Length: 415
Image (cartoon, rainbow, N blue to C red):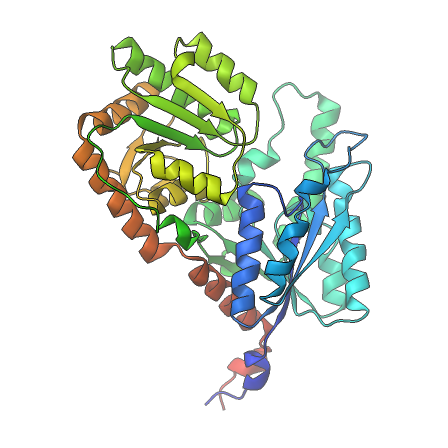
């Protein structure tokens, strides 16, 4: 029989979530924070979000963030679920020092409130572990970075001094805090393996906790198209998300005379680069590059699309891929990172070998040639998301892990 303080185990925890960027940006990370906080609130946790009003430009002087990115319009809706948002000013000199501002904001909050655990995303918690330990507050990570190998590697052009500084700063602001965490929620088995093999985290402290998908995507109407002609990419418009690979693959189809299609690229990033690349590849008239859209706009775009081309080079989860599947759209992507955990090759989409653009083009061609198979793959993807990826499941897994580490060891002793 367990000897326990089960009332302590059952109490509603106070969870602080730190996030290194503004909450109002139309990015996957900001959505992760909002949904995790909201669903933890639904499960009767009290949640405080410490969001750093940080510029994406990390060179001095760091510019101020425009008000529209700070997400004030979200506060009222989040407050209905016992979620409070505190905006933390960025350090004026360097992003690695934002953690000092986070620590001070947490100190101020603790003057009047109890906190059970702090869950962080990345470098914004670098100065927290010893401070939290001194206050008997648990510490963990929502390990959702695209790739820890990618994050820790510098550019090939950096000099010896910059390389030395990067390695030292990464050790202090990323590796050491991650290894000190009481618990880490990895959003895929791929991320779990990176945490173990690259960061050096104790595997027993890791809980695999996939992200969820907003249920509104599942409600998007889906009819079988007569032809598969409307393609979509949505996410950050950067090289590592595979935008260039998608454009080059479509250019190869066009060179074969397969031209009855259009491709919409939607997201933040280097839009002009994507437009120029499409023009250089001879398909500029078939590619439309747009800025980011809100959730309503994204659902509208997905409703019109027949195929999602999302050949990211590395993903810890691939929220865009999961959202496309939830919308009933078949996915063409690379067989890399966590993507095979999201897309079932040959069932919910097509996975090409990594960086093999010819195979990527072939996968797109398969969807074009068989609209019925593409439609069935989209519906199978929607069902897969229903079964595996919901924010309710994500929050329940996090809350279970939080409550487990809050228990004193004697709770598990047997009489």
